[in-house]
Image (tube, rainbow, N blue to C red; front, side):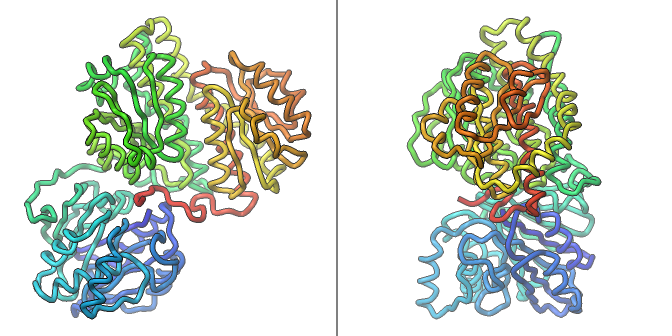
Length: 611
């Protein structure tokens, strides 16, 4: 959610920090700030409510000559967005500055104790409490590393932090618990960030800090240890994507670029894994747990948001192809409801970023109960990837737009591969497997075909853009797509929308339908096609406006609908990958017509790293 960048080296830090914050803008934020150590060892802080470009203008006329600094974009949790609550925060001496992602859960207790000792506070934030606490301890220890370490030992909650001080002007200290921090290792310089996208311009060599690990960084050296003062030996890894993958590439918005990347991202997910001639799948990340998968009695999938919608499709897929019972759980609920997990159950956690706080906590809860935990993530080296025992990378490439698009379809691809893999372990024949595998290979070109119809979808979006409410309806495999379509519209256009199974409409939502209500039906040809047609008739009888997603050549639906968007025909189990594309474009063009900030919708963040 919030973004952190820090730099120490021989270059001018202000440019690197501003550029890094701009790379992190996609995560969502409401204010931004920087702290520098000047050449005469003085600490300077600049911050403001608003955009990074406003911060850049604020410091542009300042004479800042510094080679060390920290920077932050804030997504408000404690305290309203304003200049005072923006990061960085000082200790009481104003010689120590700190930026922080996460939530200090016991900040009120710590704050009360500090006030009783005579310390004061300017902001409403939990972060300032940590800064003041570090300053208070420094008064006793006169050592920044031990002050940070001893403060963090007292903290309950999550944190990713970077600290600088005029007391020790040649040093940055960072630490994490539950909120990602990545250390980039350059030539006589280090770039620290909460996301590798802020680092890749400078170096590909990185260290992903583990929970309760801290790093002490000077211009020419770094070392790592736990916050409990135990030395660690962190592995240097390489960032696998390129800088051009996090640029817009000629598109107006990252979201549109990522929608159009889906033929490639979908293919990247199955490339090298799909054995078409055998009707089977090779998943190297699951090789070590193959026997446990073969003997699985139940699969639990835990996720949030768009990933949860993908997990619902996976429930249909796995139960159909592998005949293994599946439960889909909201990660935020799973961790608190004392779930029943048996010896042969397997938990899959799904997250694009691999850093979703609730999903990460759900994994830890499942492991506590003895479950085998696997991850399906996009970000290599992410916390969920490291916390799980096995898993699948979706290889969708960086996704910058806050509203997930290509990650969703790549997750669907990964789940289809997993379902085929499990099915072939059990009762699925090679003939059935080959039919599915061949259909998977056709999906990229079919997505391309849908994208070529963007202008028609744009016209439909403009036509209904003044509507206040939408209903999305689908059955079977396409019910989760109805949820996802409604979510996309809500996220970026701010129009209220709800997704339901088509048959559930008459159990309540039908009361909302009138001549002003657009109803989006996913009505592709399958075994329940006639049932969906009946649901369309029910909406027609109440004068609702019908937008249908249908297969090419469906003349029956053309006579029943106000607007129809055609998609190619594929196996019913693969239809969600195709039917969601028009819904992504419908949301995009609606938001564009309404003048929304498509890539950075209000109140949202790309990766939700706080509870």
